[in-house]
Amino acid sequence: MAALTLAAAGTLAVVVGPLNSASAAVTTTTIQAESYAAQSGAQLENTADTGGGQNVGWLANGDWMRYQNVNLGLTGSVTATLRLASASNAGGTVELRADSLTGPLLATWPVASTGGWQTWTTKSASSMTMLTGAHTVFLALRSSQAADFVNLNWFTIAADDMTTMPPMPTSTPGAWVSVDPVKQAADTKAFFALTPKPITNNPVRVPEFHALCTVSHHLNDDPIVFPNQPGASHNHTFLGNLTTDANSTLASLKAGGTNCDPIEDKSSYWVPTLYANGKAVDPVGGVIVYYGSRLQDPSRTQPFPEGFRMIAGSAKQQTDTPDHQGNHFWCAGIGGEVGRTADGVMPICAPTAQLTYQLVFPDCWDGVHLDSPDHKAHVSNVAAGGCPAAFPVPIPNLSFVISYPKGMDTTNVTLASGTTYSMHGDFFNAWEPAAQAQRVRTCLDQSAKCNAAGGF
Image (cartoon, rainbow, N blue to C red; front, top):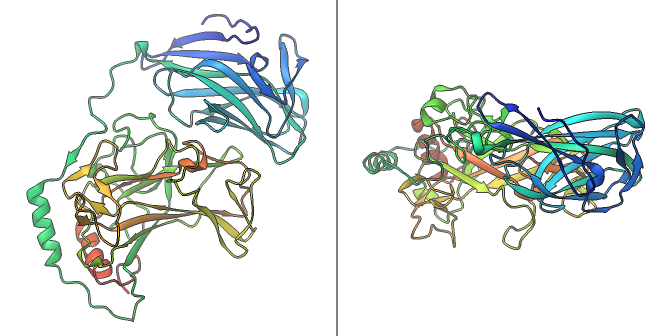
């Protein structure tokens, strides 16, 4: 390994490490905290320990430093470390962001007291978004208090260099995947010949059934966007199927277990992992996956074909836009929302209320493709009570209702994909076909609200 040399202001020091087991060179870039190209709120001082050089101190909430031309590698696989010291009990986080102060979130380091302003510790963080090449990066400081809360000495970015990487997997992500037209025609005919269960118990006349699924695991995998590429994604929180990973297929999901109620739903659902003050926070009480209809006449709604895949939302959405229609987080429960964060982005929930998000998927299908290059082009939304001509097949209106712990601190909430505007979700259908068909025919086609068992 090459020797580390201290960087002069505005320059970088690079250490090239050994080849890893995949024969990819790992390049570690060390950036001295004082080598920023621009800053707000930063002051320099000498570091007390021998050889420590200078550090950036007096850093408080809202302060930042900008660093030019930082190499994030050519694969998007990044591990970052940060050397910090703190004598503050208030805590906070240091965010590493690309391109702007609100750009994609690369890493978050939680800050707690280390015992003194010159008592140094080094913390590591895995990549949260998959950017490659040279970027301007920012260190952004977040704390619940206005006073100083951390000193910074240096940070590193260890990135894979694809010049020696093995070939990518032979699978082709982002392709049109066609349904078997003969099988689909037969399944459609059989579905509409299916007799729905008779309505009993005077149910609410809303077309709906649901599954209740809990968190199964977390991985930097995405079998829809990055099939057969383990570790190629930002971190996801997986729900339902217990086996989902980068290599998942319809067959593997059907063979796997599930934590969903009902157990006939072996589908895989996933969302980007949510972080509060740099710590991962899981949904509580399970995520309710609703299957409904927004059609004026829902009686022609059909079940999802086996292996159907789609995405709602976008990991690339980092800021609000007129067509994005806001953030969609709200406070559910007693007391509800009691205020907004200083930037106005997130609600502040009462101690008795939960931070909640509802993610809504398209509900009209082209009838031809199980998937599309962007995982959205084969579906569309109901318009004026019906499906557009190019997407003539009504499918269930899928939505996730995700609730996080009561009273959680929302002043520094991020997602593995970046800002909270980047919330998105994926659906890989692996329902037992007869169980899904019966629910669609009984509950949606008859405009009746059903329980998880598909009854009234």
